[in-house]
Each structure stands twice: as structure tokens, then as C-alpha cells.
Length: 246
Image (cartoon, helix red, strand yellow):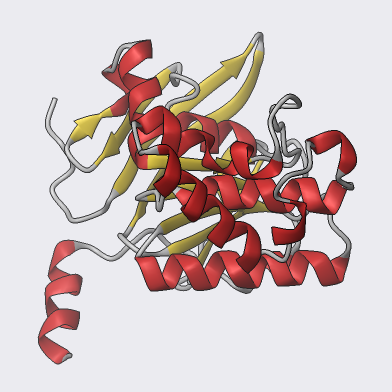
């Protein structure tokens, strides 16, 4: 088994995954470049969440390969995949899933603290991201005192605080009103571009997908409707030609 011969930060080859007797993914392949924002679109039930979970190591595909740089994610043990997610990946879910006993800043700082970052530095970083997402005034409040929009912003701050190499966002603005969602996405994409964070964004909203650099579509667990704009990343020869022209 050999790593893919290209510079993609993340690559999947021939992914299949079953939920019981139902095929959630059927032969999905893709590559994502470093710093790229990739939108995965499709209707509900098309396999978007399953794809993100396979790419991030939360699920092991029934068949196929997932590579993060030269690491074969699909062959890692469960503890190694958990460590990879903590050290290299970030995740934003449709629901915030905050720890109810912790304040907003403690929730945002939690991945940093689990990595071994000092308390003061973790707190400072958490407060910075909460301010950027307009929930700095809620830093000392526990989730029960926050509304849905505020909780989701805290979850976004938690994901960005570690400056992950790859950030997976599964319908991150679904629980937000349009104005709130626009502001959160603007912060997320700006942070990703300034910090060279690779983002894989699952959405059924074409306006959200329009913020990405590239889009792929899923339908019934398969790649659908590939066009020059939505095809996989270019091969190595194409990339070399692009780099020579810069």
C-alpha cells in the first residue's frame, strides 16, 4: 500500500461504506489541496456526513482508502485516529454539542487543553476566537444560558482555536438564521484562508457552496454531475504547469 503520488493534503480512493444493508457511499474518490475550501453538496441523505466522517477517521470505510498526507487513516487504530483528530483535524457539527458543565470559553479552549497547551494560553486563544465570532460577552456563560446561534458560534470557535490542518464542517450554519450564518461563514472562510486551513464543507445550500474554491456533488452516495469546475484536483503535471506560470 503506497500513499497517493501527489501533493494533496487529503485523498480518498474508492470509498464504500454501509449503514446496515444500505450503501451510504459507493466508490467515492476525491483529493483536497492544502488550504483549499471544498464544498460537498447534495440533498439530505446523499452521503455527505458519512463522507466527512470517513475522511476524518470517525468512521472506517467498508472498502477504500483515506490518506492524510502520507498517513493511511483507514488502517490506523482507534486511539491513533482519535489522536489524529485531536492534533490535526477540527470538526464543526450541525449541532454544537458543547459540554454543559463548562463555560463558553472553557468549551472553546477544551481541544487546546487536551493537547497540552497551558491554561493561560488556551484561555487567551479561546477568548480571541469568541470575540471574532461576536460571542465574547458570553465567555463566562454555560451553554444553558446561550441561544442556539451563540452555542453554534462557540462550537465554531472551538474548532478554529487549534488552527487545525483540516477542518470538517457538516452543515455548520443549518441551525442559524441567514444573517448569522453569513457572518459565521465569513469568519470561518477568512480564518481558513489566512491560516492555510483546508476546509471540507458539507452543505445542501448553493449559496454556502458558492463560498468554496471548488465543489463536488453527491447523489445516493456517489459522485454526481462532475464538470471542469467540480472535478477532482488536477494531476501533478497540471500543477507543475500552473506553478511555472506564476
